Image (cartoon, rainbow, N blue to C red):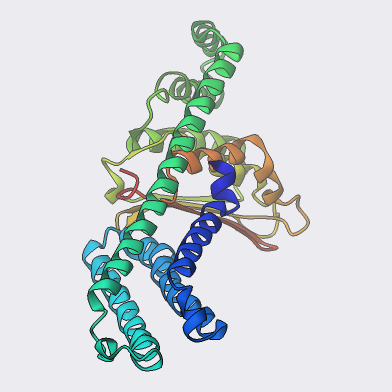
Length: 345
């Protein structure tokens, strides 16, 4: 099936069968008229049918049916069918009524019922082709997700540390740091919160956006402690995102990248700008950071594990429901991520 769909073999077989059957039924035109009229009949009828089929597959279904604009879809499909009927009736009236001399077919609408039934049949057939293709790809996607989840789980089990040992060690380190060193103690606490979120709260398919924001805030605060005063970090998580459910850890690789590759200008301000808000039913995440002109390009890191994993997770969890743009100039690295929450439900 994959080979059939990938190389459009299903379309080739369909048109071979359709044209062959039509040629067999209209072969008498060769004897009564000529090869030219016979070929003309095949071309007119099948080109008009192709207009109905591919107009439906390539325009109406992607732009209207997939967008759930069903009223506009069926009206447009009806218009496509009527256009086929009109042009085919004109050709039938000319060929069969006047050239072949069939007086009963010398009116425009005499073949309307037959041509409508043909157009509707092929419109339904093209929808069936699309549905079968979608069903196949959805089944393949579900199987791929299951396989990747299994592989991820096995990899996690292989590399898993005992969390109790980790937290006990962190508590020991925290207790060993003198109270006169509050920054070091705060670093341990924030690192512990980051680790706890990753170990215990990211197992669900989706988490509340508030938990994700808390995790990002902890990471940002941790990074602020180790950066110099010449770094300006602007964070704005709008109130309109409250209550949203989202797949965990989609945004953290971009924030980590921003702190990793932010510029280190001495005479100019270094800036990281992080925003999250909703826009027309979609969650929008923006992350920008200044960079050195000759610095190693952040974009090259997109081939690393963190951002590569995010891209793959977006493809699996939000197929055709997200937009990710990573832009770069000599002075700025800019990430734009938009997830359509309504379509992904």
